[in-house]
Image 1 (cartoon, rainbow, N blue to C red):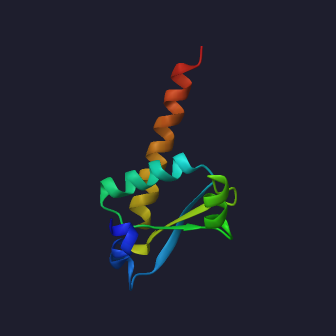
Image 2 (cartoon, rainbow, N blue to C red):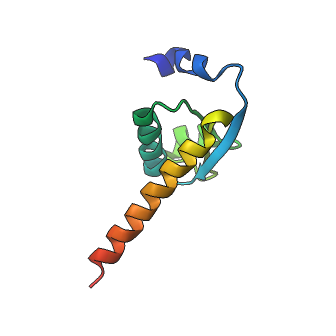
Image 3 (spheres, one colour):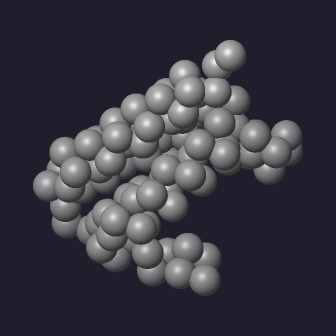
Length: 97
């Protein structure tokens, strides 16, 4: 409900934002958002170009989605993403015959 009324953006006001990632897969966007929420890191999700309209019409944003975090939490968020990506790569290697 907070996203609907914009109340989740209050934590980001007045802070400098840094681009954490540009993602082209909606599932990855949702996964990374869940990780950030779990760690208590505020974020801003912004579709590139006409991505919001494209998402409504086609169900996906082919132009990418940017995730921004406050500058003071950037290193923590980046370390979290690095850890998750390394774990996923290790799991993929373990499953290779």
